[in-house]
Image (cartoon, rainbow, N blue to C red; front, side, top):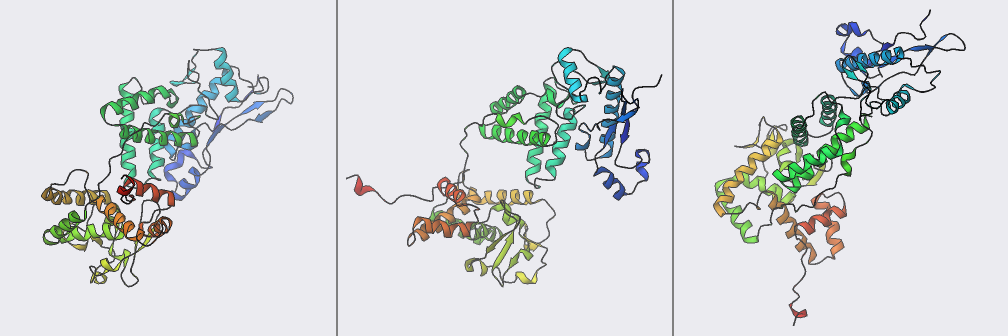
Length: 433
């Protein structure tokens, strides 16, 4: 008798998978840009002819590389062969593979059909959700999330994100999860337990940041149909009081500037870029000689909220930058021992270097931990606000200030001014008499 179905076969982007190593880089990229899937035919009982059935992609195409796609395709093929041998008939059952498996699971709670070590039906964990014939393991799902976020986040944000995800992965391993467990075995309760452990060991702020990182990971998995929903974003955010840098008094600014002028002129110029151009320390570390147009009095820097931010260079700072046009335009503006030079290290390390270098100044003046490089930005924005407020209305002040500080919205600027206590009322003693 003829079989009622054909042997499931692979589609791998239109190339011979067994000659993969002989393909050019371009051919491989084209193949990986297409959807890979398993396909088969089943005999129509009315016509007696084999008819092509719906392609089975599972989560195969969420992987960017050949090795893991091929591994998943083989698992999917084995699972389909198992179902066909068990009697699945798309014409009689009138159900898709997904619907068939879900109905079987309801009827056979606790039954497990193993194919090459892979569970197709599990007791309390539905295998098929949306279009997934076999779900990803925790290891592969986390790897997919990290690879995706690495292409999105900048070089400062990704290491922090990766560190938090890796710590969560270690915690899962210590709490009876294995790398080969299905990603859907991680439930909301487990994530809450981990966040509670982070809270007990550190702070509410770190717990909230960890929650954000895990939620971001699960959002990638939801977007790629690996999980049905990102349940982490439903976990509450705890109230935390962020630590902020204090503003310096006018006397402190005068003393600190004088000390750096005598003992560390490079650090003084670094601080003046923060103070007079209202840049963040990390933004100052990004500046190269070519980013400064002294003739047109402008500088161009990659900022927190936009790829390139253009700012004017005020005359108070221009006077301190003579001679820069003679230096290599690709040289960094600030290095440990000179203005304009090479420094082979990441920008995060450069920022940390100048932060530690400023500790010498803080130690000399016995300044507390709440004073830092960022404090100069707060201080001079507050000073500028007060100067503008002498002749302008509050709305006019904020409109002018927004152009100078680089805040993207008025709401963001107003929140920032409240956070640093830049806006204070006039003396109200006469109202209390």
